[in-house]
Image (cartoon, rainbow, N blue to C red; front, side, top):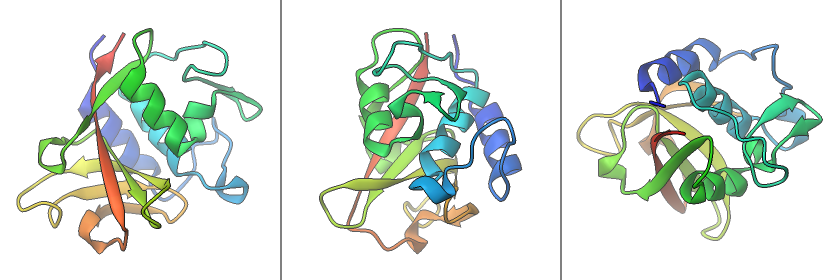
Length: 159
């Protein structure tokens, strides 16, 4: 099943500064950034993986996988998924495309913020634009963030 990047980016632009009422808003529960990223990926045509604990799914605010809302869990799911659902690979910043993900570490140890790539130009990172929740943003330059480290996930598709 193809991952339709344009649909995912369209969703990101639509909901960057508001909340889709179909999903619980996690702003007051640790942050909404990865929930928003998962919504974008799903809007791009990715299938949910309903495997308990280790899958990637959202039924409601109390019935979802850790990977739907957790930064580290999403990274592990996407980069290790061999089953149903979206999958990707760790990538270099110069290899990412709109519809991919960047995760930030502010302490050099833990990745705690997920960003959705909406545009890529040269040079990077100045021309990499993102959308995200918690500190809501759309078309924000990656270079405007103060972080210690980052990692990129290139979404390959969905099974």
